[in-house]
Image (cartoon, rainbow, N blue to C red):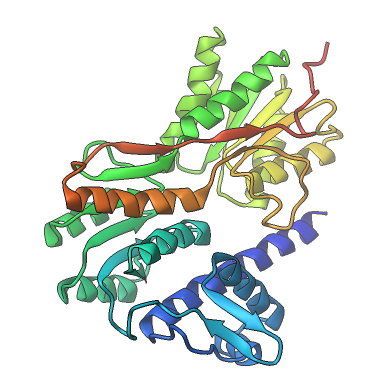
Length: 360
């Protein structure tokens, strides 16, 4: 099960990267209204399989960016009212590690409706940062969005070079005068813990990101729910894992090996939760029967995994939409820099936790 699951996740990530690179190519080479290269040529250029390219194109087609017709090829939609290389407005999007295509699709959707060109740049690599700075210096930029940037120095450096509207997506620095757009992850984790408390669980573990500073809000929701129920914090029940299946499995193995192991686990992502699930199986614990498990992100189906996992769901595309709308509000003077815009989350209860009451 483990090897198959890791392989499935890897293929999903590769197809998302293909979709991301195609968005950049369409923008940079002004391919609006034109045909893309055949799948075979794209596979050779990207060094991936045709199946991976096909899945990436599926994602772009769902967004409405392209259309495919048998025998006619893949057509990039035209940017109505605009000639290639020209736009009535432009928003630069600087992407950090782990930037998801769903965020980008929401940005592109609202930017397109406003007849703005959304230009994406990778800020992880030095070459990408240099290109981003060059675009900014060239002028004609109406707003900047930073996606999944967790280093405040990057934001401060950009603020020194750019005085226009700036919005963070998927992170927030309360000490900086920059508006953040995030999902209500604290509220989502809090509801997950409350759900487990209602089932009678008191030994509830939480597997958080490998660095708490990457997302302290999820931990806050976990701690607040326990405190409200009068349950003292037990840091031995807090594990850490990178957002990967195998890291989740290792964290789950440690937690389940405790002298007094948890009867329920909340994980910071679905991939980590599936790793905990595998650890439970190896330990002879049945998820959904004698161990309750809740993930975060509700992206198991998208990743090609099962749909038995309870999870905190939110719409990543809505974060992208809110970011562009916030840029519009800042430009129009309807908002001031700073503060946090929260997108709602929802707890989706499935078999992994629905009827798993605390063992007697």
